[in-house]
Figure (cartoon, one colour):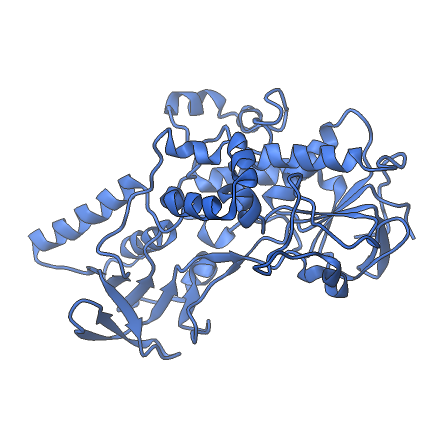
Length: 417
């Protein structure tokens, strides 16, 4: 059994990567280890389309809002990659998504000594120090757990992924299996759906691409300066202290900053394509508004039904892609029976303190912190990059304020692979 950790991070996406950097930069040694079941770092690899850009400023990277002088910033990454001047000349706040993923990998490599990949966590239980769990056949003890279990893909009720039915998260992983498709159907009205429609339209110049959504048209994201203040660190304080009724209203008012919306330039590009095809008399980009997909079969046969007049269009699709979003994975599911000691509110949601710590029964001595799954308490930035750098600083500060926070030198944990 290895020495007791000050914190154990379960999951190693961008959120816990940012926390690992905060640990690395802290003035005092912090005994920390992160456990990731994937064999290497990865973030939405299936949607790293060649021309897709980030929807947040590069200044909302892993560190800058917490520590503007950090050597882990996106600008330092650009300097190391030899592209800093080129990026400045580009005059763009929003890098390519592939470039930001490369930035994440660059940062993850620099803190790799804090991470165990291919490590599935099981049998979590409370002990006198905090927690004990097993991973890779080795036992681990930690005073605090930081859960960053990410998001789960959503498919409509009754729909199962298969050879011809995909969630958009798998788009790039599976597109090579398509050979000259005749019909491609994409379901959804958000950014990922619009990107998938454009991608298939470009990649397969002989295919008909059907976009299906219940709205009248793609709606633009509200990225105006005042609306964007909902992503500010200070907005978390406002949201957390607000009554439940106000919380619900705020989420409703500002959902169009993030959910089910599309960048204006992509909307205009898709409209140009539709209009151009009408002019030349060969229309293969078909956008079905106020519509839904019904009678979906595993072999790709489906029907596009108009919600306005009930009209029906049968389609024999080579592939149906559902760009129907994600939901937060149950953050305490990994805890097993220990999850029963996590308190919930009248709506069945986890009770979470302002420092992102789950409220637990008195017999639990350790702290359980959440990165994600706190939208009901902390607002829209719960699982987004916008506030990640600040959030991890708050979590680390909270952990270090707890009794016996620092146990000694940081171990390498050689036995855990």
